[in-house]
Image (cartoon, rainbow, N blue to C red):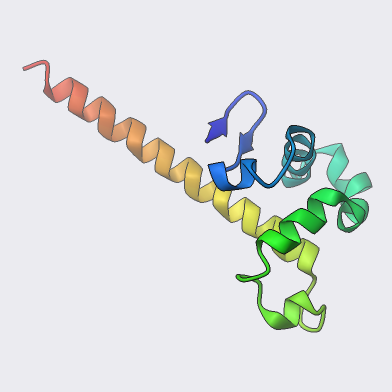
Length: 108
């Protein structure tokens, strides 16, 4: 699902993990130009949203990153969410283009 008004993009699975307030907070963190990024990013790993997402992605996250040996889990989680937003945005754009193509070909 994507909300173009607020630039939110979370699948149904994540909607079951995070509260609406946490979704708004994480969405603001994903916007690099947001002022929240600079001030609140360092506090992300102290939030309930971080702990919920850490538990949610525990199976996917590389062991070294989960243990802070080869990377930072908070950065990995935010990068993973950015990838989801990008993949969803590209998929939605392609669906819109293909539906427009189908509707234009059905006119004949």
